[in-house]
Length: 207
Image (cartoon, rainbow, N blue to C red):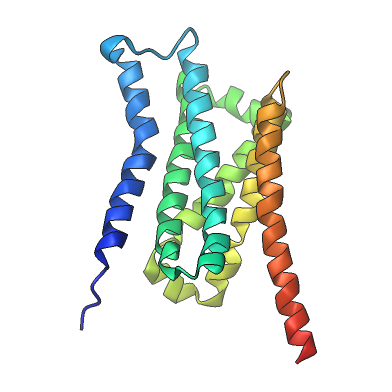
């Protein structure tokens, strides 16, 4: 018998799709200078900033799903985690593509030189590479095939989130208040997970 997806889940998924696509749609309208919109004095830098921050925001949102599910008991929230993660990957790829194409004009010698010599690009590129296996194994079929290894692979999201925040922090030249906020939020999210793991170990040890 087929399992019917509750209407509220479908509605929320449509809303999540719309919210995740909104930054991209707005960038397109700004690039086309629709109704006076624009990308500002430095369009390439604006594209890099918006795509990078949106990707990082979505990755941090995926880390919020499990704590919220545990505290509310709404297990259906898990179904939104993959969607947020894939959109996060989409924006990170756009961020890198903008850098390679619009900033450096596919000058791969300069790209690899930057990756090797500029630390914030090194950690950003590493985060992108680590995201690829997560995106490639995000399907239900891959989850079944990998079994417990799927969980191990997807724990890379913690490393990726840390690298993303470091990438953001290191590229800021003056005001670090915004990356500091991201670092604080990530610390809280990782702290919640460590606390939960500690509680489980303590419970297991007492049995």
